Length: 467
Picture 1: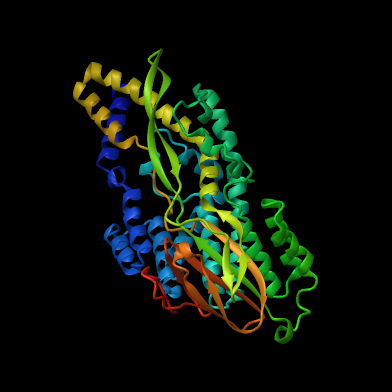
Picture 2: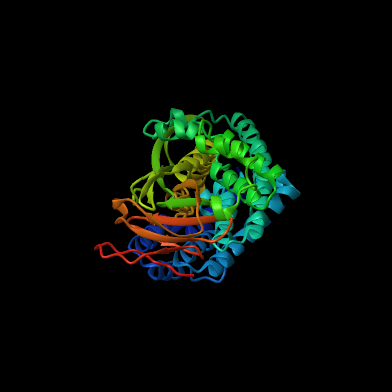
């Protein structure tokens, strides 16, 4: 490697060292933000988010988090505006992929730039869940036509992602062979391999298609009288989550839909309960043998791991008008996040290994001609080589649903005692209606026209949000 090239590498390392992204602890920031949300202090959570994002050039994660916080506050218009900014960023990403996927993959696969100092583009499941959450905002206002638009966008986004990832995985395999990097995540001693090989992770078709998103699509199309589009939505949901009675029954009942008299037979109501937070990402260092200067050198590499959120106990039953009602789990963000990491690990290991090899060779040569430059590279590397821990943390973890037929009027929903036995009053006044509740810790958040958390005399605080 020429002295000029060595100098360039040193400058890159120095630039990474001075970049604020290299020092930012996103997970720490969001732990504090989520603690405020868990305690019922949405305004405090929003204040922290703004405090940690003071620049004019707000990134994708800022709009992800702000949209969810405003939704928890009951500000659906503000939430939709924030998520609209995020959606435009994702659309720009889609356009770049469609224009030249080869160029995009070459830029993203660069070995010299650490993942955590790149501009955040969002994980595939986050891009898809964005439009799903936007659809829920609209359905909270009984805007089924608006929700239909977001659902259509979700399907189109899935197609773009599917085509890109097929190309990316093939490219990663070829480059790993060319670079002589044969390490796989299952070979990493000390890495929690079992978390990526768990049945709920391996059984997912991919990291970005959600049974809930497709079931919601079927429900929206059915409500709009578009049975020919509802059936594929229900069918896709059943394929993504086999042997789920709720999903199988949706197809069987579709033919009978639309013939009911809502005054005598009731309304079709989809109760959506979203709980907890998306998992965090952490960075661990593991010793990996790498070929450097014709020697096999044990080199510590930083790799990401998924840490599940434990703020909210899992539950799958609520009370409705004094009767128990079972919920069906249709989405786990933790499982999707682990599947995304499982699929991404070959590329992460490749980029991290090649960067370490290149750095090791360069540092030895720099030490021979300019020890200070070699020291600069070493210091910069120590700071910037942590794994990328950024991820959408306020996104709900579990999404569970129940579909019921209710008479129009007021009904009472009671959540488990682990959530303070919170009572929620819902008002049904449409042939088809979607009611969404968000449970975090012992808080219950609602937004929109149909649901309201009732005051509680229990010592736990509850968050009652009115539109």
